[in-house]
Image (cartoon, rainbow, N blue to C red; front, side):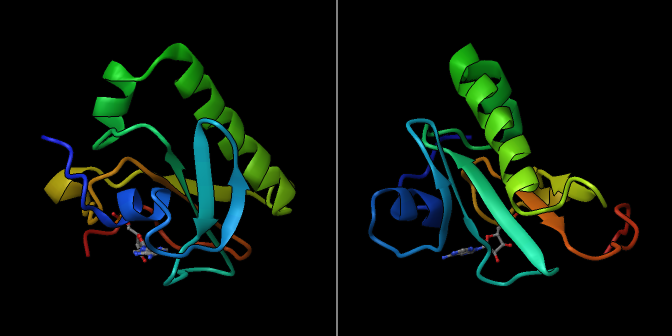
Length: 120
Ligand code: AMP
């Protein structure tokens, strides 16, 4: 898939759309989801232009990948999710229900979550 530079997360990264930032560094931006599905719902995106987890895993540098997953862990810890647990989701492609074609993971928690394998 070709990267669409007009996707909403690309616009957020360029500062064209506001976001509620949780963490930002050279490699990563994390912000609150605009339609939270749980008490804590944070999106984590790499600053590089990657369409999905496959693109990220295949083409990102080791530094980008390390910084991304380190940020996910740190954000979950800082949000107070570590003790009781949480879910990290990377919707991918049409079947995975990915709406925004810039790689991102959802960190979801703050309550007991339902099944992660629902079909709808
Ligand atoms: P996905 O379906 O995995 O691509 O998830 C995209 C997520 O982005 C959804 O949970 C949306 O609620 C969220 N979203 C869309 N636009 C914004 C925005 N401007 N700020 C924050 N979250 C957004």
